[in-house]
Length: 266
Ligand code: PGA
Image 1 (cartoon, rainbow, N blue to C red):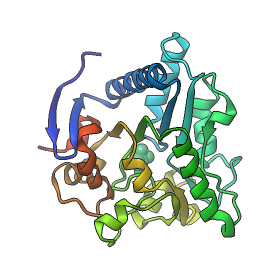
Image 2 (image 1 turned 60 degrees about the vertical axis):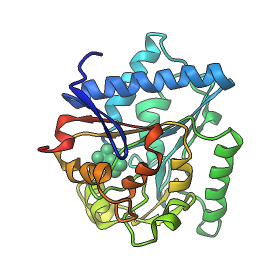
Image 3 (image 1 turned 90 degrees about the horizontal axis):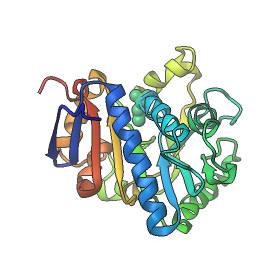
Image 4 (image 1 turned 90 degrees about the vertical axis):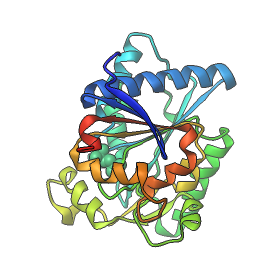
């Protein structure tokens, strides 16, 4: 894993630049494996916050490969996913339950009661309670040891979408039901037969508060479509209009793993 092109520090954390998504994903998988080993050694368990979308697919593929080589074990790992559409059935192939089963949970040895994805079938009257319970499960496990993130074209993290809230108020938001931003609906359409009208309008998402509380944050961005959001998050103002900019508040524990294209023309 010597393909690192360069690294630099930004207001939002250290940035590691790789030539392509594959080499970047190898590094991300190696860091996740290392975080698991360190946390299990330090406190008997590792608690991971996991992301979905196109970006982490090669990361999970590399993590599964490490597992098959005996270089990472999930026996003492618990996972909490960032988000899930609402409403959606876990049996729906577009659900993040299905995604996680396909890319990770179905391919490694991990107990089902250690893998947690927000439930898109909860009756609406009980959504707040279900979200609060999710946050309390994470807290009861001693918090997230590592949060894996992608970044939306609009700068979202999880389904925390750009909004006009004062930044402190936004940073304190817990896990909750949120409205999807038009850019997110457009980008998610590729998973719904290219039909934006089929994309659920809402989603359950881990809030900025539990995300920023993770002990380590690993954020990935690949490809030129992310460049504008990445640049703004790294160097721009901290604002709820660009949720990833909040990582500037936790820069000491944040690492960006990107390909060259995601930085745009510097
Ligand atoms: P993507 O989404 O990996 O599918 O580009 C990233 C995100 O929206 O967080």
